Amino acid sequence: MKRIVVLIVFGLVLLAGVAAVVNALFTPIEVEVGTVQTGKAMETVYATGHVEARERRTLRAQRAGVIAEIYQSPITGKPFTEGDVVHAGDKIVRLRDSALSARRDGAQAELTRVSEQVKVDSPYRRAYELRIGEARNTAEDARAREQRLKAQLETGGISRDAYDQAKTRADVAEQQLHQLKQEFEQVIEDLQAARTRAQAELDTINATEQDDLLLAPIDGVLLMLPLDEGEFAPIGTELVKVGDLRDMILEAEVNEDDIGRVKLDKSVNIRLAGFDGTLIKGTVFEILPDADRTTKGFTVKVKFTNASLVGNPAEPLKGFIELESGARPLSGMTAELGIVVEERENAMTIPRPALTAQNTVFVLGENGKVHEVKVTIGLINFSTCEIKSGLSVGQEVAISNLKDLSDGTRAKKKQK
Picture 1 (tube, rainbow, N blue to C red):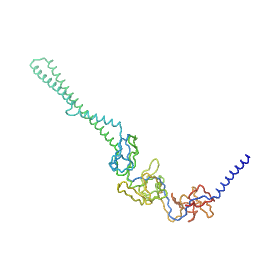
Picture 2 (picture 1 turned 90 degrees about the horizontal axis):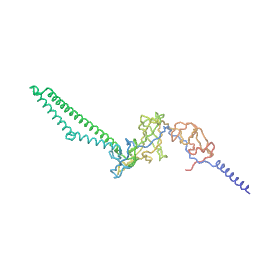
Picture 3 (picture 1 turned 180 degrees about the vertical axis):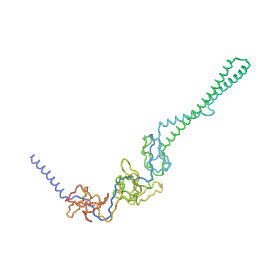
């Protein structure tokens, strides 16, 4: 009995396998098709890029610090956030560095100390002037006594030794007075130099702290504000990005091997993320002259063709551009570009997806089967491919499920 059950199960499995093979052999594969046509063929240089505001600025942390404050928007009355309108000069972010604050306090204290000491009527100066006055009186008294004794020496009233001692005391007193004056002048000079250094240190610190205050550089929309209050920003961190969204462009990178073929005013075919089914038109308007040393690519700037401004009466800076196709390019949106480098009229073309890696296409035959045909290609871009030989105008070629096809495979058009 068990043997019979096993045989039945084996038979069913075998039958299912045969059915699957038969189904695969005789059930046609659904494919999307394109038609061989006559029209314009073009060759393009491929590039990838991003949508950017033509007028934009990015502010970075000039040194490491903590986000001390995000200022309030004059328009909303709330702390700035991405998407807010800003005007040139608006305070956006302030950084804080505790070590720098300590340096400022120290410099300010030193400046205050030396400034007080160097004042004309300061106790420090008065003490020195008092000492100098006492030394002057001492020197004058000693010199006066020396002059009196000199007169007595001439009349024989005193000895030479007594006079010499008086003269020595007068000379010493005058020398001490001179040294004290020099010391006082040097002290004042040192204090003035210390005041200059303290002021310079304070000016440097204030300038550095001014760099920590990030102001909106242009009128526009706040595109990026990645950190919150209290978060740490390493040196070089992008803290603020402002752009004017009323004029958007594409910035793409072209490989150094292809840049020689790219020219100004060349037309560009664009596939914009989110609008893959729409071929958007553009024009090259700038080629930056220096390559990125890492990627070996040159930046090419492209403006959109037939772009129109959609205004915002309530806030003009909230306006945006819209393309003829209805697409709306947004800042940072990725794009694929085909920069036209050569064109040819009245060429035979097929959709690019129909071409295999072996430069063959699958032509739909009247017998419900596809035939793999070798073709000679000409100008090519990411939408179409010029065919120089191997096909005829009007033939239909498969443009989907190519990996499932081979010569003689049954296929049918996919119902739209």
